[in-house]
Length: 632
Image (tube, rainbow, N blue to C red; front, side, top):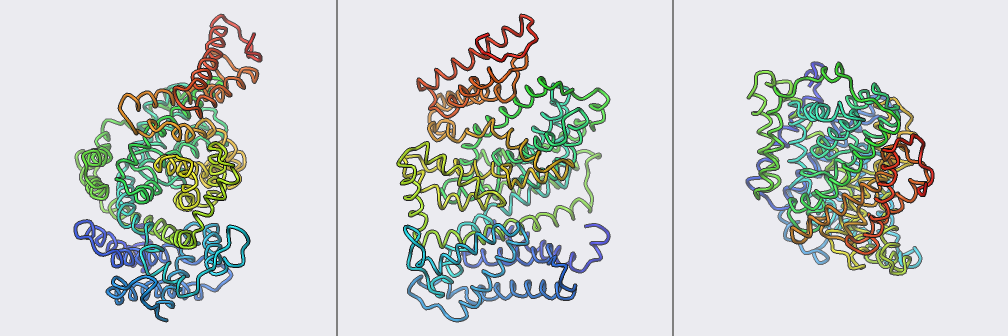
C-alpha cells in the first residue's frame, strides 16, 4: 500500500479482511469443508472486499449518502453470511422441491441476488447486469413469451430456492470453481507480478526478438502471451504490459493504432495459452468433470498456432511496410536478464507440479510461496515489505472482482437449466441451421461474439456453454471440442468491434483511436479466427489420440494457418497485390477449416503454397513490382 493508503482506515480494513480471506482459502486447501459452508464464506468475503475496494461512484449523491450505501452493502453481505452459517445444517440436509421455503429464506435470498447485481455492476459494468435481469424476468414471466421460449414460470419460493438455497445457482459450479481454482491462481499471478515476473517476461521477449524484423511487435506478442498465460485477464494484461510494449513499438515506426491493436490481440490470446490460461478454463474443467491439466494440454496446440500465425503476420507486415527493428542503443537499454533469470523459477515450479499430477490449487500455492523465496537467490532481486504488501493486497482484490460476477452468472445457469431453456435453445439452433454442421457452428460463433461484447470472457463463456454447447454436441461433436469452440470465440470477443474491451484498454494506453485500434486488433485476430473449426473436425489438435496422430494434426494446423497468414501479411519475398492475396487466402481458409488429411485439404495446401512459391521465385529473380495477378 502507498503511504496514504497505510493511513486510510478503509484500506487497512480491506487489507486485514484480505489476509483473513487468504488464510481461509489456505485452510480449505488442507481441510475441505461442505459446499454450503465454504462457498458462502468465499462469496460473502468477496462481496465485502469488492464494496470496500470499489466504493459507489455516483457523484450526484452527497459523499455521506455514498458512504452510507456502501456501509449498508457491506452490512448486507455480512448478514447474508450469518444466514448461511446459522442455517448451515438445515440448508445442507433439506430436500429440494420438498422441504419448505421460509420467509427468512426469501428475505436473505433476495438480498443476496441484489448484492450480486450491484457487485457485478461495480466489477464489470451494466452489460452483465442487464443479462442477469433478463434471465430473472424470464424466470417469473416466461409464460407470456411465444413459441419455444414459453414455459410456466417460477413462483417466488421456487426462484429463491433454485438460485440461492442449493448448489445449482449462485453457490453452484461458478462459485465452486472460484473457491477451488481461481483464488489460488490469482494469488500466484499477484505474487509473481509483485516480485517482477511480468517485467522479466517483457525483457526476455525484447532480448529474444527485439533486433529482428518487426522486433518490437514480436516482443510485445511474446511478452504478452507469457504474462497473459499467468494473469488470465486480457484487459489486465493490456494495462500491465502495454505501458511498456506500445511506446516501444511506436518508437520503431509502428502506427499508434496498430501498436495498440497488436498489444490487444496478443494480450487477449494469453487466455488461450497454458499453463494457466484464463478463468474460463477452470470453469470448463468443472463443467466437463476432467482435470484442469487435461484442459491445459488440449489448449496447447491451438494456442501455439494462434501465436505463430500472429507472429508470422507481424513479421510479413513489417517487411512489407518497412518497420525497422530496435537499434543497438535501444536494445542495450533493456536491463540485463542474467541477474534476474532465476525469477523464471516460480512458473516453472507451477508447470512441473501440474505435469507431475499435483492438484492445480496445491501447485499454485506452492508456486506462490516460491515467489517469496526465489527473489532472495540474488541480492539484486530481493523483495521487501512493500512488494509483499502489494501482493497480499492485490490477490484478494482481484479475486473479488472475478468471484462476484461469475457467482452472479449462477443465476443464468439455474434459470436456463431449470426452465429447460438450454435444450430448447439447442433445438431451435439446429432447426434454423437445418442440421448443417458449418451453419450451426457459424451461428454459435456469431452468438458467442455478440454475447461477449462488453462481458468478461468468463461470463460470456459460461452463458455460451449453457446455451450453445448442447446444440453443438447434438451435431456429434465431442464435449471437449464443443466447449473449446465456445471458449475460443468468447476470448476473441474481447477484440471484436463494436465493443472490444481489450482494444479499448490498449487504445487508452497507447493514446490511439479506439475505433482504429479495435479494427486493427480484429483484423489481426482474423489470422487465427477459424482455428476452432479445425479442432472440431480433428480431435488430434486438442491432443486427443495417439502421439503420431496428434503430431500430424499439429503440423497440418500450423501449415494451414501459416498459408492463411501469408495472405494477411501481404508479403512473400516481395509485396503481394490482391490478385495473389485473395487466392492464397482462400486456399488458406479452406485448409484451416477442412478436416486434416482430406482431399480438399491437400488440394488447398498444394494450390496455396504453389502460389506462394511462384511469388518467391519471381521475387528472387529481381522483379520489384507487386504481384497483382498470380498467373503473371
